[in-house]
Length: 282
Image (cartoon, rainbow, N blue to C red):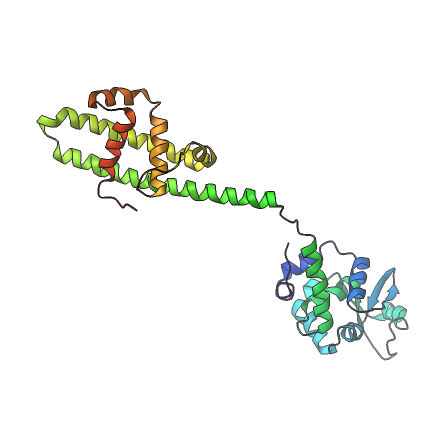
């Protein structure tokens, strides 16, 4: 996960991530890298008072108390209120006045956590620098091969999107042809119109198949597509050529093309040209 000063200061989730695997011993190590720190040992762990935390970060006691008031639940396991016998046990270690009735004891993790929240402390800034730099150093670095692979994937996605857009155009044009055939049908051209209608139906069905292929196997489509030779948009050219290559294998095109006296590719292009008539060109 990437860290930044602002994220550490403003985001509880980021602070949780930053300290997720930090033990008290690790926290002491990090604190000492920013500025030397000495903690009293009580019950096997290092602890400090609020005043000592404030002194370390070179801020007022009030600033530390304000952090606790706003984010107390974050410190539930890291700051402990000492009274009675517990306070007596640590009074001398923490150099507390005999008149002090209670005190907060900070363990090293809590000591470190408060530094992630102090915006204006120079020591806290140095501490956050250590955490941000350590996180950046642990980020996996992309190799040249990884970057090239990512570029290839981006290109494939762009081509697939272009094919999908051109297929949508074809579907729209085919619908227009079908409507025109219905309106203009006459007894003199009934057989021709039937053939064109059948072709339009075939185009529509196969375009649906192409769209499914684009969604699931963009790499296979790109491997089939030859260089662009038409004056139409590149996306349209790719979809036309792919469609021709695929549909040339469809036996029914041979029968329809023979009746029209054309090759299967020519026959398909003729229908597509009619379907795209009035469409946009580059």
